[in-house]
Amino acid sequence: MGKKKKSDKTNPEKTSPEPTELKGWQQIAAFLGEPASVVQRWAAEGMPVHREGRFVSTTPAQLNAWLGQQSGKPVHVATDNTDLTAELQRGLSFVRHKDPSKATD
Image: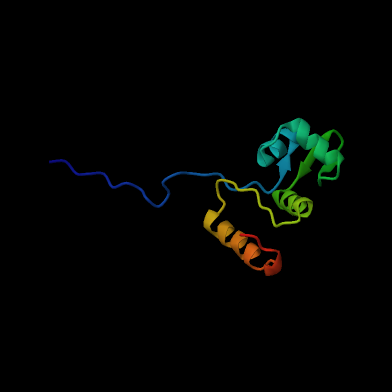
C-alpha cells in the first residue's frame, strides 16, 4: 500500500492580484467589460484617464468612482479577487438606507 499525497489546500489556485494601474485601451476595456471603442468614447465624455503622449492609463479605483458618479449609485466592478459576499452586503445596505417613501414592492 502506497502513501497518499497530501493535497495543498492553502493555495488551490493562483490568481493574479487586482491591477493597481490599467495601461492602454485594451486593459481598460477588459476591466470594464466593454469594447475599446466604447471606452475611448467614454474617455472623450469625461471618464478619468491620464494621457502621456499616445499612451493612456487609469486606476480601477478611479473608474469605480466615475461609474458611481455616472449612475448615482455606488458601483464596483467585480474582479476575480472581489469578495462578492461583502459586495452584496454593501449593496443591500445601500438599498435599505434609501428613503422608504420611495420604495416600491
